[in-house]
Amino acid sequence: MAKAVQKEELAVKLDEKDLLILKQLQQNARASVKDIAASINLTPTPVHERIRRMEDNGVIKQYATLVDPGKIGKGLIVICYVSLREHNKIAGAKFIKTVQSMNEIIECYNISGEFDFMLKVVAEDMNTYYDFHVNKLSQVENMGQVQSIFVMGVIKQTHQLVF
Image (cartoon, rainbow, N blue to C red; front, top):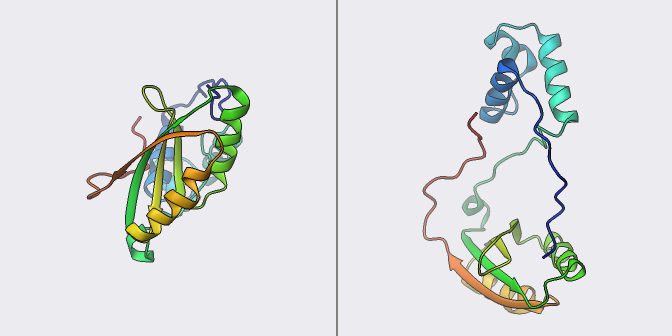
C-alpha cells in the first residue's frame, strides 16, 4: 500500500523553553514574541530564533485559523472509511492526489485494518453529502468499498499536543 507522503521523520531535540513556546503558540498562534518571551523569562530575540528554528525544522508546520463548520453552513461531518481495489504504489498515489484536490475532504489518514484510508468530510447537509458521495467520491479510480459514519456531535476536538 502506498504511504501518504511520509518521509522517515527524525525527532527534533527540543528543550524545556522550546516546549513552553510551543505550548503558548498552540493556545494562541497570534501571541506576540514579546508576550511569549515575558512569560517564559527570555528576551524576544532568542524566542524569535527558537520559533524560526522550529519552523525550519518542521516542528511548527503552519499557523491556522480553526473555523466552526456549522457557523459557515457546513454542519454535516462524515467519517468515511475507504478501501481501494488495487494496493500498489501507483494506485495509492493516484488516490491520494485525487483526495487532496477535493475541498469537501478536510482530513485524510492512511490507516491499517479492514480499510486503507479514513477521510473526514464536511458538507452542508445530507443531500450535499449524497451528491459528493455519488458523483465524486464513488467515481474515484480504483475505489473499492466506502463506509460512511455520520458524526452526531463533537465531544472533543483539539489541535494541541501535550508534551
